[in-house]
Amino acid sequence: MSTLNRKELRRKVHRRIRKKVSGTADCPRLAVHFSNKNVYAQVIDDIAGKTICSASTLDSSIEATGASIATAEAVGKLIAQRATEAKVEAIVFDRGGHIYTGKVKALADAAREGGLKF
Image (tube, rainbow, N blue to C red):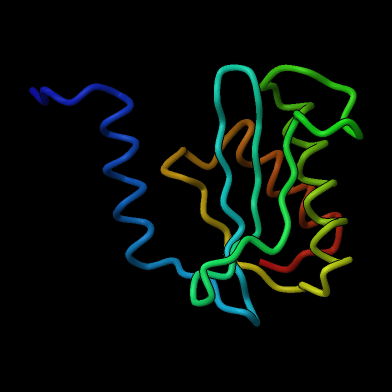
């Protein structure tokens, strides 16, 4: 039986994903993070080491609070809007070591509906 806890296992999976997923200027990386209270998303150019745009539940334009599926959808729509304003069309999705269900899937689907191509 593993002595690692859930957080350490997720970080281990995330490190494995990050070996394969990298963002460029043409196709940046959409990284997601979930805390107990908030949802965060960033569009990152890993080669330049810069964040192109970001969105979270802490933004005043998002009225919902908490880290739920509804707030993940709102953050996905907002990050898609800001990315298209920054002239980003195609991205690589970095799920942050989380399983692609629930909040992660809701955020990704909302970003796709907003015009981003994965």
